[in-house]
Image (cartoon, rainbow, N blue to C red; front, top):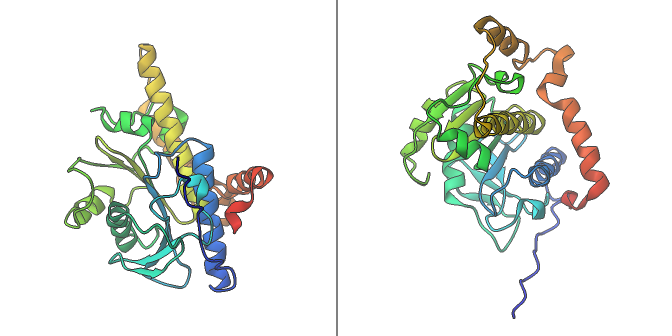
Length: 264
């Protein structure tokens, strides 16, 4: 029986700007945390992050690594046309579907520094429900009025679909890709991961409740609107914790206790 070749990547620390290296470490941590929380699908899906000070370029994972194998140096830098500007992993390239989806969002939403796309069991299940994500938990209400829907058109490899996808996302934080999965975008890695963790939790709650066959009780319309306003993203420094920063610091401490190899 043959053995898999060892994973390779150049050591890019010192070869890129300090800001880019910090972004790489943050993004690699995000990939590892997605694996920890079970938000992965083999080698598929992507998390992308705009390169600081380098408009039109973003970091993306090498197509062929598990999320728990991604490191800071293995990430590729690509432009909005899909060209690899700086190669990380020398053995695994870029998945075209990932480029099509993520480049569309990065091009249209300058505030979307970080974009996470998934197809977990929970978000795929909710994406196929005609009701979509229901306002039946406090967690789900974080996305009340901030979730778009995009009808399934087959695997996202057609650049023509980019305009339709962007239109479906609009100014929302989250997008449910019908019969497919989900996407969230944030102003930072911290905010994007926090949004995705909350979104997955909301989907899990809904799937569990429906599987239980119990009657569904919804909060009043007034309570829904008030809660959505309370959880709205804020640029106010006093409310920075709502943008996932406090949670991110705790998550990095957890990750570092278990494995710091993502920083290579």
